[in-house]
Every structure is written in C-alpha cells, then in structure tokens.
Length: 136
Image 1 (cartoon, one colour):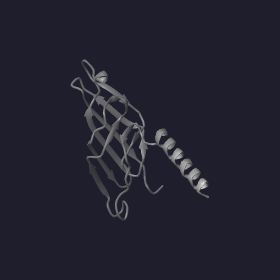
Image 2: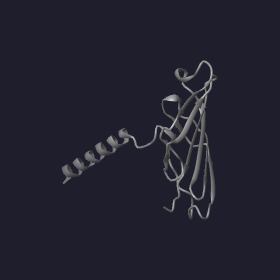
Image 3: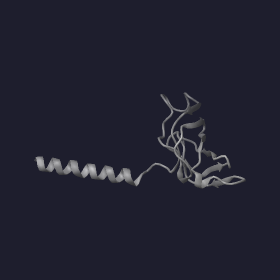
Image 4: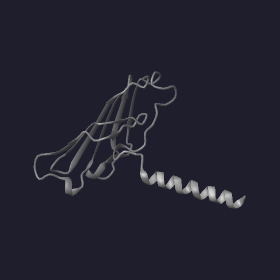
C-alpha cells in the first residue's frame, strides 16, 4: 500500500511540474486573473485594479506599473508600462507590435486587441482591450 501511495505521489508531482512548465499563462498581460469580488459584476459595475504584475513577452521584464478597468457588460482595458530590454529600443521613432494574445486580469479573458509601443528612451506601454459579456 505504501508503494502505491508513493507511486501516486510521484505521478502527481511529475504531472503538475510538466503542466507548470507548459505554462498556461500568457506571455503578455496580467500574470494572475481575478474575479469581481462578492456578488459579481452587478453589485460592482466598475472595478479598477492597480499594481498587479504584467508580462511584456520578449520586449521587457515584468512590471507592476499597471492598471486594469472592468466595466459591465464586459468591457476591459489593461494598461502596463515598463522598461524595454536594450535590444528592442529603437534609435528613433517608435517600435510597435500589435495583435498579440494578451491576458486580461478580470476572469482570465484573453484578447488580441493589443498593442505595445517602445520609445527611443526605452519606455514601453502595452494596452489590451476586450468587450466580452460575462452573461453569454
């Protein structure tokens, strides 16, 4: 019986570590989604969250310079700012990437209505938008 329990434990550990390595979090956007607190969106029609961790894919390190707004009936906007890695900083003009998959913070909704802008000073701003009703 102990051998069986030990084998099950090892199998569970291997499965969870392989799932973690596969990664189901986005390379862009909010790291951990959250739900609207107590009672849902009808009790809290507009929510604003600040200071959550944001990912910028290959463009820069994670940052907590972030804000997300949720407004019923499902409109979400996420804005994150950070410093770009030197390889992505343009000499002049701006670098823009659009249409990547971005994780929004409320309810784990993902969107491709997204954009990152990087300035010659190395500052980057990412915006992601979605309009998805939670009642569909």
